[in-house]
Image (tube, rainbow, N blue to C red; front, side, top):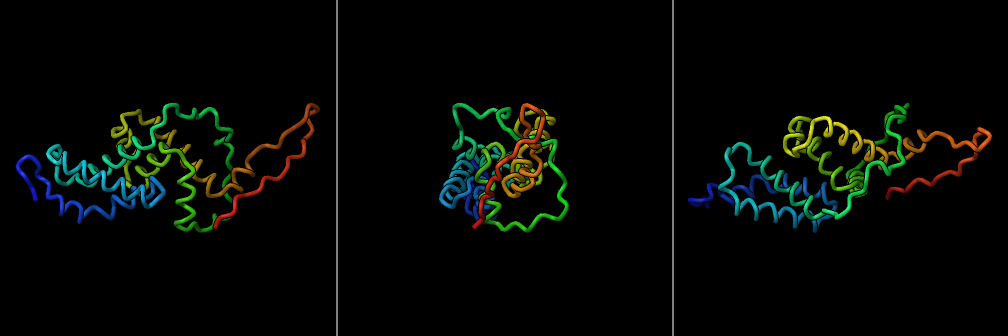
Length: 193
């Protein structure tokens, strides 16, 4: 159904890209209803703005950009949480002695749900869209160094969600006023369903 002002065949566009857009929307939002809403919103916007697409071979990345923008708008908060408020030292994470256990899709989604929208987007762009640092920087209109640091922090937060015992082991022991190590109560790890 291509029209004069809109060169896209929407039915074909949905048929070819619905599954990929929905999977990405689900990873970002963490829920089926939200993913369905986001996917529908993406194709509605694409239908209305099809004339803006310059290159037919970049349809997928164009749809992903629309999806990211819709997701971020839906999660926009008036006051963002400052990164400096985190009590996690990313420099002191130990290398695992044994390979980490396999992670099923549900565990991954639960961990992603606990991350901020910004973390989910940058992880999705890097892992799901397979974009380079430079491409992410261009699309988000931020310096490449910022992309690298945000991605490193997002990976560390995701790792902390999936493997909390690694973060717990890397926390330095607390000391009292005399410099002696004070007893630290054990933290209970979350139980994965």
